[in-house]
Image 1 (cartoon, rainbow, N blue to C red):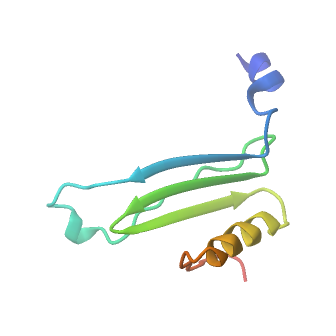
Image 2 (cartoon, one colour):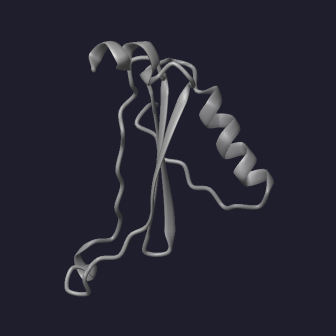
Length: 94
């Protein structure tokens, strides 16, 4: 399996995206949860990964990368703003 994965597992792209879409919790838990996120780490040959989750009327898009350049994120979120989608960005870098 490792050989097959190394030969073709990640060779066809540069980004993964996973979408949990709309997530609902049982009513008893809802007062205690204000936000949810999930993050998938970068893989061996994909320098960027993106995960999307919707909860409580908001959509959270998490991007992670193993490279220094942030051009992909800048272009992606700039495009959302250009087409009229409100964006709030949080970052763990200064």
